[in-house]
Amino acid sequence: MNKSSLIDKYFQNNLSSEEKITLHELLKSDMSFAKEFSFQKDVQIAIQLAERKSLKLFLQELEQNYTIKNRFVLSKKWLVAASISLMLSFLGTVYFFNSEGNSNEELYAAYFTPYSNVEYPITRSETLHNIKRNAFIAYEMGDFSKAEKLLNKAYEESKNIELLFYKGISLLSQNKQQEGSEILQFYLTQGTKYRTQANWYLALSNLQLGKKERAKKYLLEVINSTGGFKKKESEILLEKIE
View 1: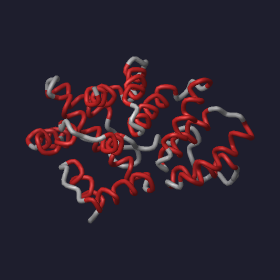
View 2: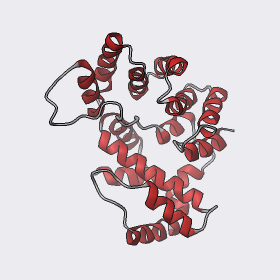
View 3: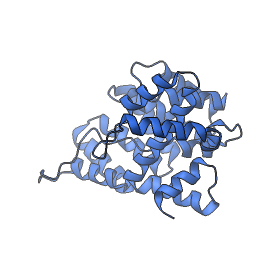
View 4: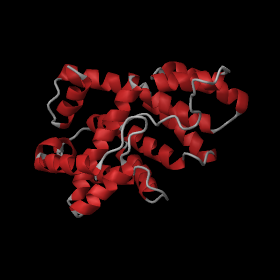
């Protein structure tokens, strides 16, 4: 099965047990697949929210927010065609997001994707190799075990607190929820750049750990934060775990 079909079957709630395992492995190991999955998930969430908006506003929001870097820009013609198609199949394609009985594990898998590397963008022209660069190369390649170790070394050398945010995400990407949560909690005591993002990932990790009240606390932090990072997703997820 190709990767696009795997994503389609996920949103149709039609994955076999083996396919679910394959999907989760790809989300951890294939960064481009994880980004595509996240995009498709955002589209599904946007469709839900479209019930509360006019179609015009819905299309404007998609056009503004869903430009795929280094791939293509969504045209208005595509948006109209896609929105009509998606709205016609609304009940089927958003079954997962509308269903009431999702487990903590299913919700975590649906909403978790590793945060993009915006801290140390990797350029091919750069020839200098150092621990920090190697850490983020591993991170972008989906080798989160290696990234975790290198990020830890880079932090010990520089004491750059932002590196701990990515270390926390690397741990969560290895299903080390407790360890990842502890790192992200520590990050919140000193870091500022990724505070909202850290709250989002803490909400997910606590949900996975079965700590719903703590998950709700972090979701509210995201909802009440400035900026728009994961606010809509947090509102929907909060409704699901109430």
